[in-house]
Length: 390
Ligand SMILES: Cc1cc2nc3c(=O)[nH]c(=O)nc-3n(C[C@H](O)[C@H](O)[C@H](O)COP(=O)(O)OP(=O)(O)OC[C@H]3O[C@@H](n4cnc5c(N)ncnc54)[C@H](O)[C@@H]3O)c2cc1C
Image (tube, rainbow, N blue to C red; front, side, top):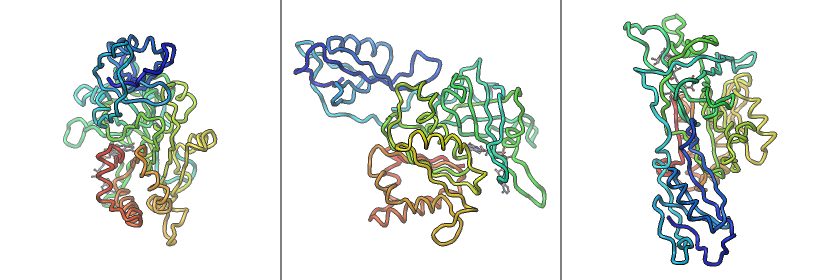
């Protein structure tokens, strides 16, 4: 364990120990917690936290800090902590080792109960998109923002066997919409298409859009570590969403800005920049609009919201305004942010959005003498480029 030099400090100087805590709670908080102690109690508190299973991230005196390694180093001869060493960055994958996955498998799913099922669309919208909330009480289905769950629709497939699972991004925070920690919410678009002149309804999306409060639902998971939010409260988070791709972003934004969430997360008070790019066909198709507007009012310095409404707005060439046109429009600011290590980019929605975004990023990179084909894998390797499309 590397900590600050305390040579010039008195025993009453206050020190801060920052830990990542996954234990002692029914919710996998994966939370960052801080303990402020006098220097004289640093060693004993540090030992106690280590024994409790917490991962110690850093010890600081409020002016600067160093990253921690799992093993404590011996104290110096006067009992003060050993001198500071350069910070070490934990690999992104190791940092997520304790995120819950596959607590419930398809052969033994958790059976939740629908609490509510409401349309997210306004009058005149295209299609059908619902916010479905399910009760998880009585089980052990825990999750964090950015994960997905599997749903097994009722009934049998054409082959006479039970339906296969379909994945849905979780739209609620780990505390659930009611903040009680026992619910999960999804944002589901009913799949509908025509085949040989016949209207076909997607099996699971129709099951979910039609399901009534009180009905049981077979749930698996959670799965996914691709879309997790950085624990860093000062991160910059750029979000590119189309349609139901807003689901994980809605969870991130609630975690960052919802007053109830902020009260539940004293150790995650977001202070970075969150920038949401949202693509929908029409204004009535905008999802969670009231929530986002309230965050804009309360956190104008931290939240930015850019919409691409394809059937109402025109791009620079007079065509429909898609999300990639907004990315191109704000390329300067986006690339200025990408230059900062604290910036993460998230893309979620239908797979069809990927080529357009790639093209816009490639053009913007090229205008700055950069090669997006090289830069994108670098960002991915650094755990800063997160994509979930379906
Ligand atoms: C990680 C992940 C997260 C996801 N998150 C969400 C989410 O948050 N919200 C959400 O709504 N969905 C989400 N999905 C998609 C979801 O899993 C389902 O795929 C979707 O709901 C359709 O399932 P279904 O059972 O209704 O359709 P199915 O009955 O399974 O029908 C789908 C099949 O229909 C066929 N088909 C589809 N469109 C056409 C067409 N136009 N013409 C001809 N054939 C066609 C294809 O063969 C396709 O495989 C996610 C998927 C993944 C992988």
